[in-house]
Image 1 (tube, rainbow, N blue to C red):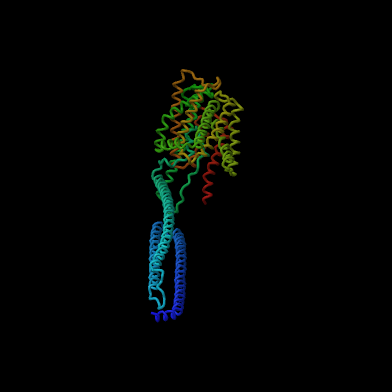
Image 2: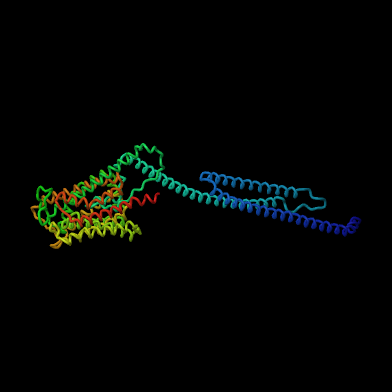
Amino acid sequence: MAQRNVYSSKGEPEDAQSAEEVLHSVMQELDALHENVKGQLNQDITRLQTEKNHLIEDIEDLREQYRKLQSQQMESLSGRYIQQQQLWLKQLAQVLAHNLQDLLVQRFNELSANSGHSLSSPIPSGEFPIPLPPSNYDERASELLAALDERIDRSFQMLEQDLTSYESELSVRLNNMKTLEMQGEELLQNLVNRIREELEAEEEYLENPFDAQDSYPEESTNSVNSVRPPLVQPTPVETPREPVPEPSSVPSPATAKAASQVQTGLVLALSSAVVLSLFNVCLRILIKGKNPRMVFGLFEFPGVVTPGFGNSLLILLMRLIVVMALMPILATFLYPSVWKDIRRLFQSGDRALWSKVLGSAFFLFLSQVLIYLAIGNIPAGIAITIFFIYPIVTVLGSWILFGSRPTTVGFFAIFGITAGLILAGWPSFAAPAPGGGNVGVGVAAALASGITFAGYVLLTQMAAGKLHPIPFSLVNFAAIFVFSSLSLWVPLSENLSPKIDQNVWPGLILGGVVLGVLTLFSYLLNNFAIRFAGAALASVIGTLGPAMTALFGFLIINEKLQPVAILGMAVVTLSVAAMSVERIVAPQKKAS
């Protein structure tokens, strides 16, 4: 026992020294292990941060590539290919995201396995067991992996939302493009249909000249006045066609047919001028004179009403009653779509067009009343000749309103018309009128009628192209009928009110029927003349109105004119004809 204690007391310093060395070595090992683990963790965190940066850069590259692909697709691909490419990009992004996620999971699993293997390796001799169990490191790595997973999922969700928003925006733009494409196709289809219809209508016109679509806006001026206005008829513009070589010795059937149509149109235009001249003479017969008129040298006719403003209104109203009873039937025959156009006019609410239509009707109403007053006071031929002052006013008005400056021929024609009017009206002032009328009133009324008719022509030209001439004429007739009715309904002074004997009403009604029938018959002939020969040639024939009126006045009621008046009438007719011929020649010169 004593011996053991001796040994123990001798070995204690050595045991204490060895224990301290072991503890010191253990601490060094722990520090080394701590530094090693810390270094590995720092390396792992750095590598993970690098991977994260790479992922962010890849996501940005994907977004940039997506933007580039989107811009390229919008420029080069059509709608259906863009949708396919969008679907492909979305699938590619999903695949890339899935592959990147799998790669990260695989790398982290490898990292976790390598770390666990290094910690579970045999400890060298003299080392203490590791105080940190490997399971804690696995849990930490799993938490980091889960956080990285969550961040990656959030990034890809944001990317998917961006892709979805881009896709919806592209869909909206593609729908807009489709809508614009459909509208463009519809416009092109309408244009093609319209061109086809015009070509078919032109072919039908060559085969059947009674097509109602071949009228012109100014033809209504010929139908509602007692004189054909030759200056407001536009020259029809034909579609240019390639010349077809044909033998010069044998005329083609189409050329022969066209020539025969022109001849027929000229005959119809001449017939219309004859009917209008008969209208003027019948109006002259209807109005009382100082002495009874000898009709055809067979019987005397004293007339029905005395010349005056109120009686002119009454004659116009009686004439328009017949016209309004028969004109709808004639308008439907000439232009079947007349009621559709009138309904469209009422539904359009176009105040500018309505003001032009009603304004032209009012000017025409005044012109009609004044020309009736003029014919009742001076010879019909002189009244119609003075009425032809309206070409001068029309040309000057077109110059002021539309900037259409007259040519040299136009200025000479204006000078000729002025000189002719002076020559035609001078004998009426130098000697009393043969019928006993008031010469001053007759000449002033004829001049005012021509001026107001020029206003009607200018307003009609402003409304040309917006409304077909046949419904335009029908609306004009209706408006003049309303103006005439209102004028007779409004109380007038004793000098302006109608003065009708109760015994002459049958003659007045019969005269109104005759004038209305002549008006419609002239309208029908003039309409067909324009379709066969064209508006320009028909207007040239219309310049014969004053001369034919004077001729029929001489043949029917023996109304003689002095040579000076006849000379003035011829000067006016030639001047107006020169202006009409110039309108025919000018477009041909421009075309050549």
